[in-house]
Image (cartoon, rainbow, N blue to C red; front, side, top):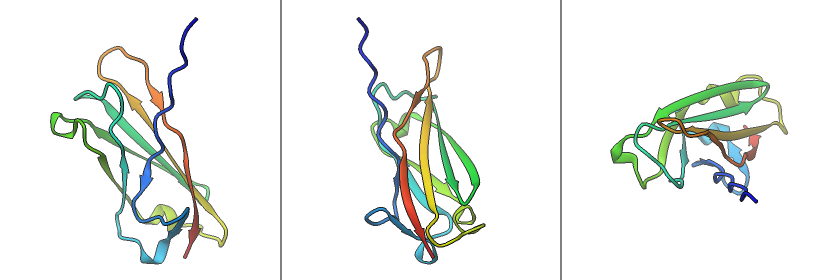
Length: 117
């Protein structure tokens, strides 16, 4: 019997509050972060994908020795939240870890926030 691998924690959209992201108050670029994860290694690639208003953006960061045990910071262009905005839209963020070497990749839980201008 194999044990099921626990999904990675959802990313954090730093300026979101209680599941709501206020676009007009946000910084450009908008900060997001990924918490440290099990077996984190220098050379891993973390790919954060943001989907909002029928647009998608993926930002990749390679983990360094200095990143180990610390949250990994991402800068998201505010434009992804603004382009095609309609009241009631949501944004979804998730990330994938591509380990250095031959290990398999892992997918995170998703974070969904309501967009308010």
